Image (cartoon, rainbow, N blue to C red; front, side, top):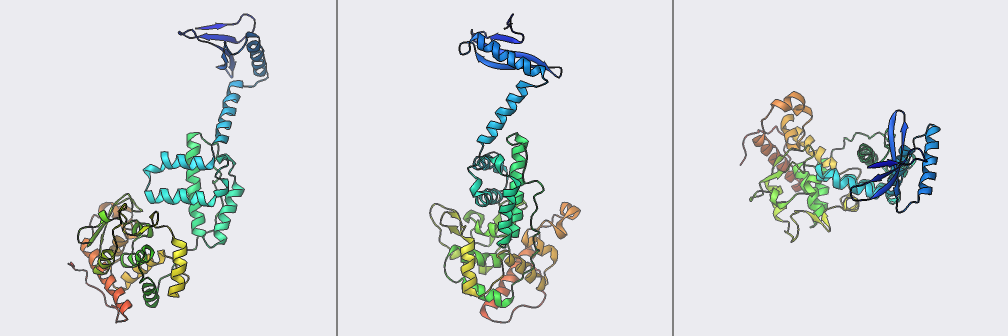
Length: 382
């Protein structure tokens, strides 16, 4: 029930079925009815309620909308209370659970690292200037690709927050980034030999490097390899859709050289990872890569160049482009568009023949013998 005051226009008391009484003010703005709750009648005197109602009615007469202003002020206060760290946590819990684990891990870790000084500040305080400084620092450190990725992660985070009403704007929109230079580095046979020799010692990183070279798969896919993804004979690796970049399951035939590498790994208690780091999935990339550069004498290369080296090597061995793309699990190029829709051949035998030939080629390089230079016959192997 709503009862209005005879003395002060707009002031009313709402009486609930349980006997509770609350002061409110009712007014019209732009042809719409508004109501503002003032508080319990037991906490506010009638005189104070009338004074507040008089002030509200006066503001309305000046063309203001007190109810909307109060709502906006409350929202601003809520936004100021939401720190960048808390926003990233919400994004991770409420949104990234539906994304690929590799993406979720990379996105949250990158944003926390690049904007570590702003984590305890309100998320809305992260402005364009601070973002550009962070991205420029990465670019100056030779990490233009990471700067671009950071901008994309930030835009996704703040875009999600804006859609939820948690923030008013996305400061990452149209942020300038340094163009990423397209890499074309392919390791020579001698560099492959030197890198293989420098990874002779046991250790997750060394094993991962060799796995990258033998399979041509992505860094996160190899480093996250789990024992249950392998068949009993270590001849087939089934990469689940949750771990592949394109969200599609991927079958990787494993040559005897890769099988030997897997059999040499110890199964540790408490983890299914084949190449575990000290705290779960291996993460010490920068230091380990710098050490490998020193010990091998090979410089100016990235781990992803191993994937390009495999693709180029398969081409030199005469492997068809469609087979190479199937080995690499690419859905672009020859498998894009309408071809990708209607082409359902798995290339299983061809993939096996290609990877077996590539592993034999790598083995010949390592042993210093004659490498394979002829076109291979993609017949069924094994």
